[in-house]
Amino acid sequence: MKNLLSTIKISVPEKIFLKDPESSDLGKRIIGNSILLIDEIGFDNFTFKKLGAKIGSNESSIYRYFESKHKLLLYLTSWYWAWIEYQLVFSTSNLPNPTEKLLKAIEVVTRTIKEDNDFLHINEVKLNQIIINEYSKSYLTKEVDSENKEGYFVVYKRLITRLRDMILAINVDYKYASSISSTIVEGALHQHFLKEHFTSITDCNETVTPTKFFQELTINAIKS
Amino acid sequence: MKNLLSTIKISVPEKIFLKDPESSDLGKRIIGNSILLIDEIGFDNFTFKKLGAKIGSNESSIYRYFESKHKLLLYLTSWYWAWIEYQLVFSTSNLPNPTEKLLKAIEVVTRTIKEDNDFLHINEVKLNQIIINEYSKSYLTKEVDSENKEGYFVVYKRLITRLRDMILAINVDYKYASSISSTIVEGALHQHFLKEHFTSITDCNETVTPTKFFQELTINAIKS
DNA sequence: GCAAACTTAATAGTATTACTATCAATTTTG
DNA sequence: CAAAATTGATAGTAATACTATTAAGTTTGC
Image (cartoon, rainbow over all chains, first blue to last red; front, side, top):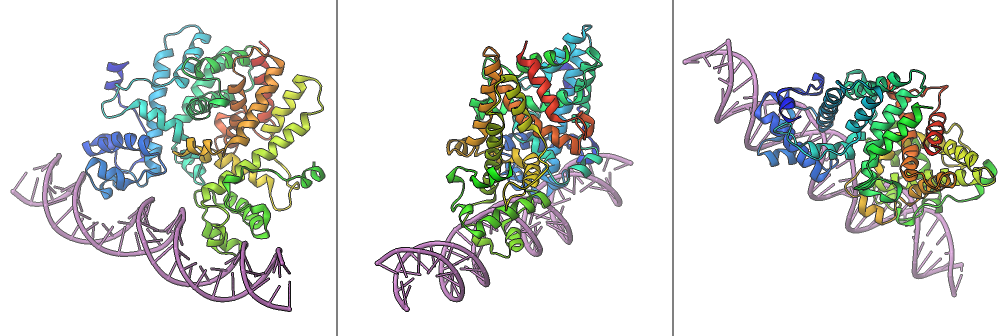
């Protein structure tokens, strides 16, 4: 994965940022260090002032890239889902068997991220933690409908749609292909959260993975 | 449901509040109007100052009931899940068939709340909307582990556990009874959110319910 | 019936947040 | 090399999320 990915650029909807953080050194430091800082203190406690201090830059400079910390979160989440989408497309493209394809796709969207080496300035392991802990906050807002119209959630929706199409390729008559796809992606994040904080209401742990759970669940759902 | 429920008191963990809001007229107005206000402007924009203005009382008086707006959200969510738990126990208690019991339980935890009349000062329809839009924010915090230890999430966890036991009563060998239970409850909230805001990634709408989706999903999962 | 205890309201104050605006210094580029 | 763009520094604002104090009103217990 390493070499291939490092040559492509993950594409995030342009309206999310004021100035593309990939276009400068400061921009990359903003992205790279915001991941470290949000992972460390949580999105609620995260401020541009603290980030400025961490990267030896000024609050006002960061505001030239993102108009708010909410937009920065939208950037990070879009980047993450675009990265997952790339892996999904890449790792399923040469599988001829539709069921194998689906199982692989479920693995890609539900697995724990264990290594970070694809992109120099981005720690994918910590970004994955941020997605688990903060993703819901990006859409659970009063502005969700207008932001959805602006296209801030296209990447996420496209990922769910790809998964749905793989399910329909196995069984066109399954009535809940969209709902099960959104349940797999959101549900996997939730199971990862539960195994870290509410162990009594999940079966997932170091040995039992959300991947296995959702693979079985999906196969049983669509094959009957 | 009406008469029976209005005579009982929904019990919320005591540590959540400084002074029991059920114990005074002001307390009830705080609860009742916070539901209306949070539903109207969203939890992020909600402040005790605005609530004070709405109920013709003072910010500082509200702080004597709850030490923060976060604690108030924990109160509302605990109250909601305790209310759902009551309905679950009550409406399944006299069903002899374990599968019928489970299907009824899934219905109770996934259905849309349509009427509010059980409790005088609480609008259950709007409270349900708050749970859909804000529940995740109550636990997606850096304080989740210490607050979990304090018992702030016991009601929710007990509800999931009850559902799990009904699944195990049908099939003791099903390996993911806890995970599917937590997926049903969290997933249903998510599907309700999607049908309001991201219609392209759900099959649920006015005619297709999350209830039917999760009932089928669960039956297929545990019976194979 | 009245004092003590408690509850509520009003006011003021604090540190922090989430920005915006301005201007100067530095770097890039055409 | 001059113009344009980028960054840094400083200052300022309205709002947030509280805490503290005091006074007025209400409830209660003997």
